[in-house]
Length: 428
Image (tube, rainbow, N blue to C red; front, side):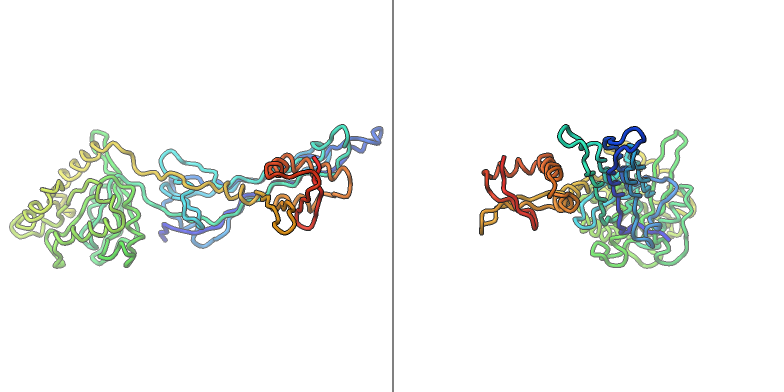
């Protein structure tokens, strides 16, 4: 089953905790600290796989997690790094933060591998906290927490040329005739329910990638039918070929069809109309008396607007050479590369926000209130009753910039500092 969108939850690996231990050897009765560091947690990495063209692997599974890092061990043994989680996606996949809808990464162009969530850093073992006055620290640093977010995956095919047109006008037949693609072809509406890609090769080595965009209908830009599912695939194309049924086999007006499709393109994104267009007037093999008045009407209507009309027959091959060389010439004149969307959001920002602290003055008693998840966690495993434990916590406050922030807000000796259920008197 073709799938061009999915919503999943990804989680990096938690960092391993630092270890608390001391050398205990036969002739070293009072050895120093030798607790090893925790291992780094695994990253969540998206990788482009040229062998897949759908997001179906992510439609029936919701949660993907990297491996946590191992805890440190005694004798200075560091914990093992957690294995990275590799998620394979087709080229053209856009990764968005589901909460803000901002782009994290576009797996297009040169971007073949992207670390979206970094694993948590491992905590330091107690050997790192030994000082001249605290030679046997009974504390170790916990590993950094994992980061978990929900992301949206959207596939927007990467093609130089997009075939657009109403259902049953011959797009799939044209694609199969000029490329090695083998789309499903039948004489009923919406045979094509997914974009099909093919490569047009010329004898001189030139060529381009062409995409058969599933048939559009009026109201597509408003989400009627599968409108938005199809329209998004046109965004990356550089040239559009409008295919119309010049023979009006089903009684459609080809001029009205082109106006209708351009109207839907403009409603979805006005920039789409800035792309060069050509018109392929298909099915001339069943026109009575040659090209006829329909081709003349198409040329009189659109060629003054700079849109060239090429009568073709996708079945017999008539006119295809002229059409393809005209498209190649347009591509040669366009120097910009296919669209690659710039990142708008870094998930690390959320991690930094989650670990941030706040310093506020309580209007009731003037106490300086300091809060934050990292502080709360530190209070949970630090023994503040012991002098060494308090010194360890003071060092943490200094390293995190909390003491500096308190001074910035005007704290004086003797002022009260409140951290959750604990209160301290501040002395510099």
